[in-house]
Structures are given as C-alpha cells and as structure tokens.
Amino acid sequence: MSFNLANRSLAERATIEDEKSRLFDLWQSNLGKAKAEAARLIADKAKRKGKWAEWVRAELDGMSPPEFAQMVRAEVNRLMAAAK
Image (tube, rainbow, N blue to C red):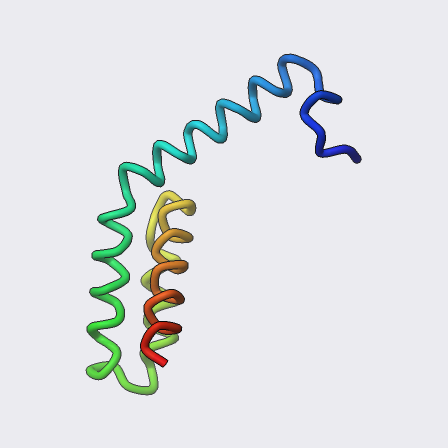
C-alpha cells in the first residue's frame, strides 16, 4: 500500500485533505480547553492518590469527540513527563 497521495484518485486526495483540515481546525479551536482539562486532571492527583490513573482513564473515556480526548491524553502525558 502506497502512502503517496499522488498515487490516489482525486476524490481520495480530497477526502484525505478534508479530514486533515477538520482535524487541524479541531486542534486549533480546542487546544486551550484540552490544556485546561489536563491541568484539572493533574490537579486531582494528590486527592485521588492510588486511584488517580483509573479515574483519569474513566474521565478520558467519557470525553468526546475522541480526537479531543486524545488531545487531553497527550497533554496529561506531557505534563506528567515534565514533572519528573
């Protein structure tokens, strides 16, 4: 399977470009909200102690759209790595 867009039909390329544009718009308009959500999740770490990771997974599973949940997950991971 080739990942070269030049080997795809015009309709396939348009579909791929539309999806890329949609995801970029979602990222751009929700980045601040994702960072705030991640900060909220991190802030509860001391209060939730050993159950924190389980709670975070449940919180992320409840977020939609899934792309937003992935943004929050990435930000939580970034913040946790920076804290080490």
